Amino acid sequence: MQGAEPVKEILEKDVWGNIKEFMNLGFHIPTGEGTIHLTIWLLLVLILAFVVTSYFLKFLRKLLTRKMDSEDTLKFISIFKFIKYFVYLVVILLTMSAAGINVTVILTASAALFVGLGLALQELFQDIIGGIFIIVDKSLNVGDIIEVNGKVGKVFEIKLRTTRAITRDDKIIIIPNHKFISDIIYNYTQNHKLTREKIVVGVAYGSDVQLVTNLLLEAVDKQKNVRKNPKPFVTFDDFGDSALLFSVHFFINDSFGDPRIKSDIRYTIDAKFRENNVSIPFPQRDVHIIGHTNYKAPNTER
Image 1: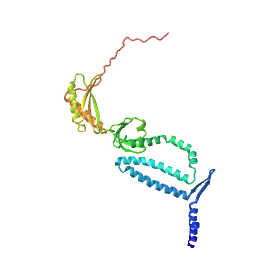
Image 2: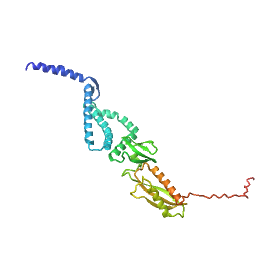
Image 3: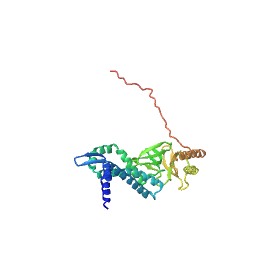
Image 4: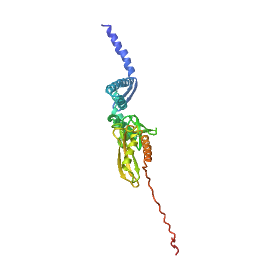
């Protein structure tokens, strides 16, 4: 037992002392309220805190997404990345505070910088918040048909800051996510894929309105992309200046291909009207030119 005392003393003074001395290597900055220690020990604590936090966040992400479908999981991961950066910042501040660094002084000194960055990146933060709202409340999904600033597009990617859609002419439109909060966006397929469309046509006065109605229904019924149920229907809209105005309403599942479907129906309507002698009038104007043969210019001489 007496021989164990020198060994214990050597371990405490030499080995452990050398380890503590090595761990305390770094920068020791004196301040008015104390000393800031930027040492190897602080670096190791930061690394350990990052590793533990990273594993904990990964476990938490798997725990929360285990019952989600693939689309919701991708959305949640986008939000989780933003949360992860915030958690890492908190871990850094707490570790620095535990090492004797006055975090309040750092935050106070950086307040002006944070305010400037906040103003400069205000729209960026709005986009991120908008992306979080989109992902959480599911107001927009991949595959939805939307209309933004008169452009119709199909959503194929939703990110934390932007949403990407492809237009009917195969062009990519990149939409900042804050637009979905501040602007009015039409979503054609939010509730379901079925949408009601219509084609307006005018026929000459004196036409058989029942014949026109039947021809319009036949033209729509021949299109394979038009749903049989709900059934298409025709409305007699108004007595126009030079025509009787009708609308044929029909339902489709492909809002994105709407222009092509309507074009095919218009071709069919034109052919059927020609076969049955139903004319589509166009506005006409009579211009009368009145000539003044005896016109005499006034005398301006004095």
